[in-house]
Image (cartoon, rainbow, N blue to C red; front, top):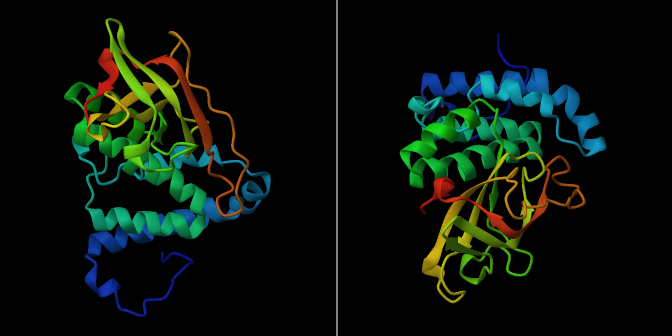
Length: 242
């Protein structure tokens, strides 16, 4: 059965897609029509992310869709991934942001730069939606300029300790794990920037806090948060060498 939304194709892009790519797009398009659009108005007014959609998104393989099947992902090509994001965006920008942060900004760095143990531990859980991730680069005073960031990580005998703050962190209120970027050297050494996988429920020292940022009209369901790290321990085993 064809999806309710047919769209337009002024540039005849459909003809450039493979049969598999069109089938993936149509499957996600139908899911958006049946599951997302009917509830999005109410969720938008409430300014709350519709968490009940997460299991369905995971079942379709939308999280980290272009990462290998060996880690529980769909193993699709990048074109298929882009078509998936396009259809989610049609439903709502906040839902697309949720999925693209999970896949492209959290799962992809772990896959590309993490150890094999980290990949096996985190990626299957994230692909299934059991663990939600967020990505901490942007800072209150310096925006998304990595060279100017002042969040720092120091290695101690007990592991890595983070101090600093991040801003506009999508998925920040629901994440069980955060990819946090910090300088491990002097503040004027941008080449010392590394990424850390930080569980948000850590109990040692001071856990990262995530106060809410008032919802914007363009992305009301993005659960954007400030994140503060005060002597927060990432732990040597959880370090992602980036």
